[in-house]
Image 1 (cartoon, helix red, strand yellow):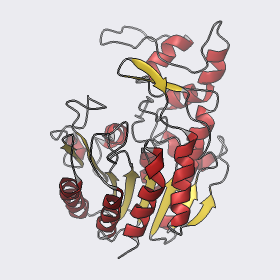
Image 2 (cartoon, helix red, strand yellow):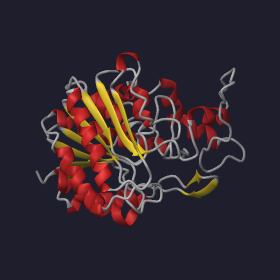
Image 3 (cartoon, helix red, strand yellow):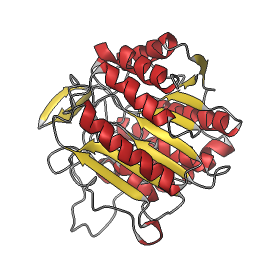
Image 4 (spheres, one colour):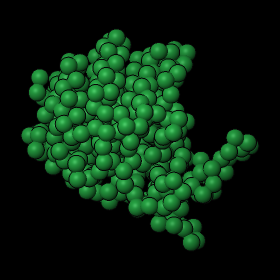
Length: 346
């Protein structure tokens, strides 16, 4: 398998995040990228580093704006510079006020903009956030180009992740929606594209972006949002709207889900992909379903990812794996290796 890695895959991530009311050290640590990279090497992937992104590059800019609101992108690019000029500003941008349901006007003050464009306290913006997010996008765009040129499968090592990023809002450690941007890139060649999200958490951003469309299928297997992040989306009755009706599938599973139950859900998801008539597949690849993950509640073993990889390969589609979560660092290397080897075992 070909692997494209972000030039910033081992960059320092955010410093801290809010978790159940407490500020804790952020879980997106540099060691995540390092261990995933080692797993790809051990799986004997052919590894290339994505080109350094140029924010003015026309194709890159066009694809980002095909998914994200232009004002949101302007905010991400300039947020840190404006924030850091304020007296007593913090080292990272956190929203300390959020627009509620009674908002009557928009405010351009940096504190107000943080509340408007950052959806939770797991996605603080720092000095290098825009650069790192742009690196992730460059990575999936290069991976998509390889699929379009005939590669069977490509693994995109992105940091930061992307599947929680909405059209105009960062959240859940995500700033630009890598899988959605990759889908747009693939749609230039394939008439129907499916996003299969196997991260522990619902891919709410991808759902929001494509909810009205019938050319991109979004399927997510995740923890039951009635008592799990992101809480407000990911329920089974969310199936798409208007033209997109039937093109969004959520498969929420209870805490404690083991390999047997998970593979049953994955089989259902795979059938949905085939019924949709997808010509290319993007896998939002999270390993926070592992039994020891601090942000997960499933009970998958390392060998479970071998079985998952095999089932994904059985769909017989050009496949782009885009890195999402996975925060139990000691197991990441082996989990990635199992996924890739399982995919290539057929």
